[in-house]
Image (tube, rainbow, N blue to C red; front, side):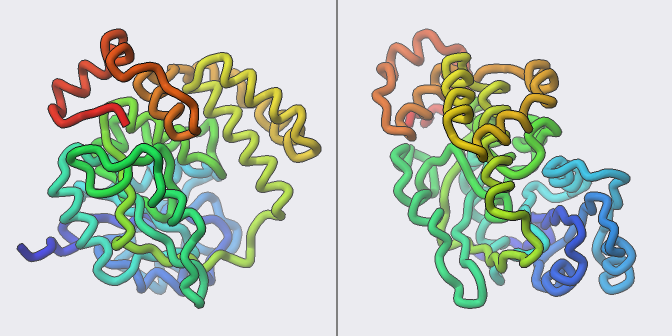
Length: 312
């Protein structure tokens, strides 16, 4: 059966901020409809894209909302699937059509993570090997290893699943915003899988934050995600780790503090089934799957929706 055309099935959503030249250099590479969501750039990005690419839908946000820009773009999409790209990345020719065929064939697949080739040398991103070796294995009905995480510019989502579970939030923002989305998709009974033959290209921008600052922001994101979705013991462990993590960890902890009230308002811990999968992922011995299922209403919901569902 022929793969569907990407313009009928997949919209590419690109979130950007102050990277006009890189964005313009890569927009022609995208297949299918494209939505660019601009996070209040000050370098003329919006005007430049509208002039050079009149067929691209451009949304000019009045302020920088971080990763929520992707959610804005997904809401505007009119296709069943949405591929995320950064202003310094794009999907390989034919990748979106193949992704649509995989998603069509696996109706409980909420997110597909592709492999990523980095730079002009096309180096495999180290994360590719990590995803391929996921200890969650390949559950029945999955097209590849099951996941509880992904990289934004290497992910294609089922639009309905992504929006039903809230999309990206305005608490974590960026970077490290993917973890909470992955947890919520999995917790709602959706599958997340690594499919390496679907490839994204990433030529990292030279306009990036210093490494120390980014590491601190990742600490902040882990803390906030734990506060929203993990048990209190995990929150305490993350906070203690940040305190003991030197200047980066302490900066991350301080950066999280102003967002704690919003994180608490959004707090909804994931189910025991999802915690058990996280335990497998991180190498801890999980409680028995049978005991988890007996006491976990979400597991019963999963079985009703998907008779092939098994705890990873």
